[in-house]
Structures are given as structure tokens and as C-alpha cells.
Length: 117
Image (cartoon, rainbow, N blue to C red):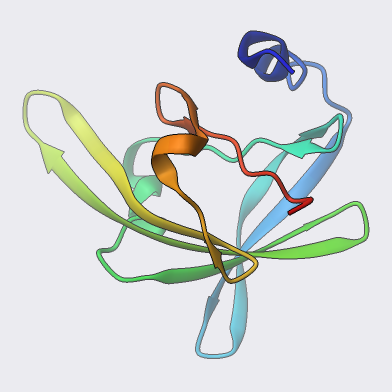
């Protein structure tokens, strides 16, 4: 699916996926995200990025459509006085398989992960 068409498919999504952060064998809800056409769009901005990008490999679980997937995310978050909050992804694992970030980047900070592999 073309990138613009994929992103637009989430605008009127009726289904949601729930993302949880796993810490010390406990789940804490991060948020609900759009689920459409068998795709889930996860995003964040501002201080909320601190949950995702901690310089450590953080583990999350994503529940949608009676499925649970595991995401492991490592990245850097920093706050600047002039530009606000900034973060970038350095490592990503999906269901315990490392994702090649260069080949998965489909837009400005948008990564597509094929969950059929």
C-alpha cells in the first residue's frame, strides 16, 4: 500500500489497539492507537516520548484484533529549549526479531513493520 494511502487509512479508523509498557512483570497502559486495514499506527509527541525512548531497550506489548505482539524499542529522547522535545529511534524489535530500520522507514519518523514475517 502506498505510504500516503496507508497513513490516510487511519483517519477514520473505528478500531483501536492498546499499547502497554512492561516493567517488572507489570503492564501499564501507554495509550490507545488507531487500527485499520490490519495495520496499527503508534505515535507520540512531547513528553510522552520519554516512555518510548530511554536509551535502554524497553519492552511493550500491543493488543489488537485478539492478538498480542511484542515491541522492544531503544532510542534517545532529549529536550531542547528552542526546538522542544526531540527523539529518535536507534533499535527496534518486533516479536523478538530485530527490524532493519533503514529498510522499514517509509516516511518522516514512520516505520512499517510487516507482522506476517
